[in-house]
Amino acid sequence: MALTTGAQVSVVGAGAMGAGIAQVAATAGHEVALLDAATGAAESAVARIIGSLQRQEAKGRISSATLEEVVERITTAERLEALPPSALVVEAVREDLPTKREIFARLAATQDATTVLATNTSSLDVSALADGLPSPGRVLGLHFFNPPPAMRLVEVVSGRQTSPDVVEAASELVARWGKTPVRCASTPGFIVNRVARPFYGEAQRMLMAGVADAATLDAALRSAGFRMGPLELTDLIGQDVNLAVGTSVWEQTGRDPRYAPTAVQRELVAAGHLGRKTGQGVYRYGRDGRPVDAEPDAQRLAQLVGGPVETDPVARTVAMLVNEAVDLVARGEASVEDVDTAMVLGTGYPRGPVAWGAEIGYAVVADQLAALDRAFPGGRYRPSPALAERAGR
Image (tube, rainbow, N blue to C red; front, side, top):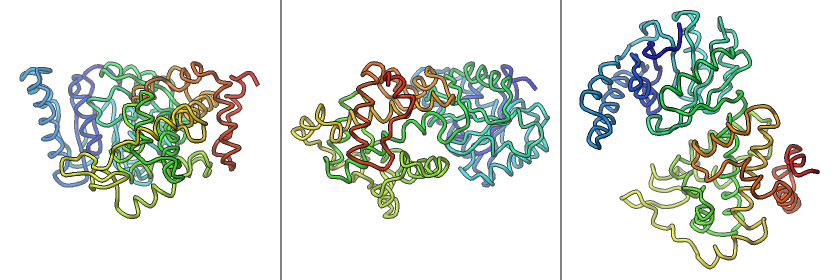
């Protein structure tokens, strides 16, 4: 089956991500079948999709006729075996490898051999999902970002077995859906969740060390153009969710110290302080969902930014982001353009980290990391050989 406009698409998993992907595909003109193992979950997802479309209609973004057409394209199914013959099936269930492997095995047994099988995983190995399946070349990752109707980025992830033709066709398809595809290899965290680890980790480590309070650290990063500070962002994402992704990357990289989870985040999760959804995380939240203890210390902020890299939240974080990005590119896991595009669109960074490194000067970044490595030995701040090469060393 070809990934053409209007081809049948099926989505397995009707949570926030699955429902959002189904909405995107139906809006682009595809017939969409939506399935969830939980009774009534697919029907509830359709109701949420209708609500989302109604809000767009109220804002004048779509017509009532378009709303009806999109909704009419979405049907629900009760079993995997009842899904219609599809050109593309997107799996969007919980991040559990055995569960996903079982789903893919059943799909491979019931769908045509040419059906493209995609996973929306944010951290699991696409190659491991394809291992042992017939026609493993049609398996790839399509990692959408939350919420899929609003977020432009899609990571198109190749496993070891993925056919280049499938990657090309899937990239063209999501582009027709109005998204921006970036291509990468199936390595821990792909692009965004790999490169972004220091954004969260450096702030958490500085908080633990008493460099500044959370509000001041967040304000420092916002002053550099980041939409949100790292600590308030982890509260929004959910400390448990952020810790799970970070732990997955750490484990998959052989517990590389670059990605080691912090004690402060582990303690928050153990205490049930998961962020906005529980009313307390790094910050405490009022009934209106706003933090009640988020006033930065202006005097301390002025002391930090532009000071020594060990206590400058901006310089320390950006140096680590640049190091991570150039290392990923050097390993051949994604292109410079795709890395920078992914980090701007997927995380809202003010610049792509590779371009940012060129602007700062790779030699400057290398010196900053060397200073951090001396101050905090153990391997977390080791400069990438690729960074040293870019710095002319």
